[in-house]
Image (tube, rainbow, N blue to C red; front, side):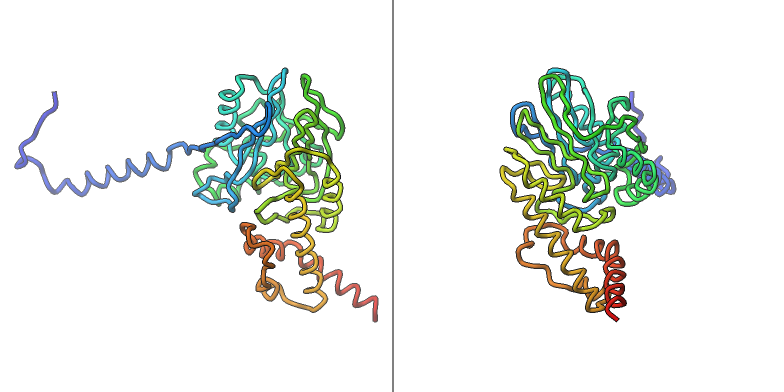
Length: 326
């Protein structure tokens, strides 16, 4: 039975303290509440699902959910492509895979070492994680720094997340899971070690972050824009019925490849010509964005990042050319 006290017996001097305790309790509950990712897998063809991330930068609003992940159901279980930006995302992805397919996970293919593609690894059986040797070594080297940065940018969404390095190496070539036929390609343009997956059974090309669509590409670990461009030319020769980029919507044609290629051309030309003219980074940052890229998200933000990452090399090359001409 609940005791009811007459108003006259309540000590009003206690009221501020009571309110403070209540507010602190609410704050504690909010801070310690587990975040929730509302993942919506879309079936894009028989036995193949795609989960599209937001075309934004990492933030405390989106929890780092800016990446595309995917999964393919085979007779011998599910093949997962990338695990997302946090343990919580990985758990949500794992749950939705079981709910959608009713099958166990056969293996998880990690396309490259960036945190939005790998930090959900913790939610999966570590013995089923596979990656290129270069991805494994890069994640070992950069994982802790990535984690610090992710905690800073997305906050409580990263609660409990640990860096899990795939123990299993994969090599380019054919991969058969059940009756499903895949082909794996090792590229380098985006991160130095980029896995591209062609699903011959379904006709879906999983281009990973070698291709961005309607979202500005990121460049912190590229070995060079021209090298990336050369590998895109190889991608453009592959026959497919659907293309899944690392970021942005799927496509039935090569439009995402052509857009990424055109964007790389613009960046390369801008940086080269700016270096030849002796422009400062701040002057390049004020460069107008071509109209053809109006529909691409985060262009200005990524332009600033690209200049900080890559412009010193363009300046060095321009100075060397000038020295050679003297």
